[in-house]
Image 1 (cartoon, rainbow, N blue to C red):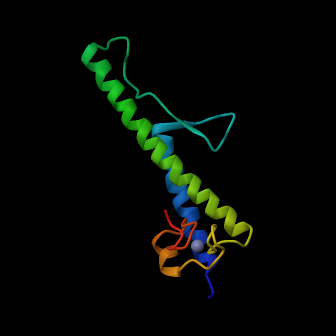
Image 2 (cartoon, helix red, strand yellow):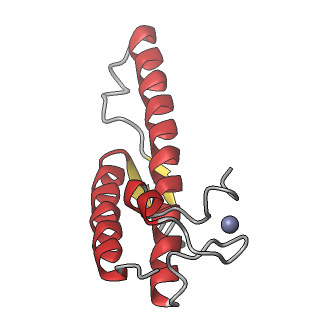
Length: 119
Ligand SMILES: [Zn+2]
């Protein structure tokens, strides 16, 4: 089965850019580990904040942190898939080495396994 790696690489690059753009709105890159991101505190005036505002800020931070984790985990999958593109392993199941169904890759170009080995 022939897999159009170029097509999928483009999809992966585009999603990577989108994810990094979204991450920049809620997080900062860890200067020591460029692939690691840390959620940033919402920009509110903490000096003037009353209890309710502080609670809102905490909640907003929690939301950012969980959104950030979600984005970061997806970005990690994308980066792993891009490495497989570079090493010629794209489209092969990382568990059994068999070809991944192209429909599965179209639904998720970052899929690392065939359906049988998923989850
Ligand atoms: Zn497999």
